[in-house]
Amino acid sequence: MSTTPCIAFQGPSNLDGYNRKRRPSQQTANIPRTFVDAMEVREQVFVEEQGVPQDNEFDSDDTRACHWVVYAAENPMEPGQIEAAGSTIKDDIKLKPIGTIRLVPFPHAPHPEPGSSYTFDADEIESSEPPHFIIDRPTTYHDGREPYIKLGRLAVAKEYRGAGIAKLLAHTAMAWAQQNSIFFNASSKVIDSNTGKFPVWKGLMCVHAQEQVSKAWEKWGFKLDEEMGSWEEEGIKHLGMFKRFDVGNVKPMFG
Image 1: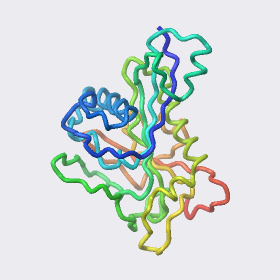
Image 2 (image 1 turned 60 degrees about the horizontal axis):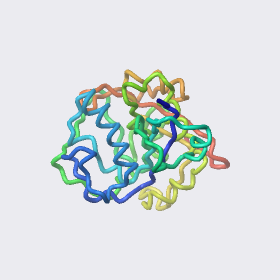
Image 3 (image 1 turned 180 degrees about the vertical axis):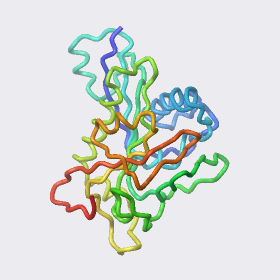
Image 4 (image 1 turned 90 degrees about the horizontal axis):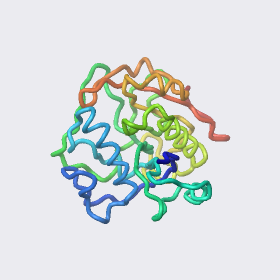
């Protein structure tokens, strides 16, 4: 059996009709297949392994986020087939989703408060609109004002861990963000009420990392934000971390 991975990309999508009370495999046909596959992996890792309620795994950020899914081929592939597959999914190659990650554009909800505990209310009706720009509390690497993008929902199927899949996903998403920085400026569609201008991404990226995998994020260049502190999401301890990217001539305001 070959486990040579290929990666699929899913940009912001219309996910109207996604039923969080149903498993990914039970969603209607209008939901993009790549997103369903991403949710299959997230269900395995966050719901089945870590005990996050099924209802809580899907959230409003999923609609506006970019998603990547890594697939492993379950049938043998010749070198020519692997090259042909590229980053697309071929009907004649049986593929299994084994890892996923998402990248959420700005704006974001306020930074979690140190020592707090959060859980998603699945019964609450969510707005399809993104959060408003706010003046947030300043932390070690964020001045509370600068637009940042957030990487998260990194998940790899248990039997494929230790093979570099998480690193592949993280580096793929980070490289894409750096190469497509203008995407975030155009996709926010929200004027910063504090400045009266459209925001510009200056290269700051955040992760809300589970404490147990924070060392991996450190290896990939993220720094622990001491002033953001730690908190619990769905009973799992998280830490705030940031990384600064070079996005050309855009001058950062902080960090």
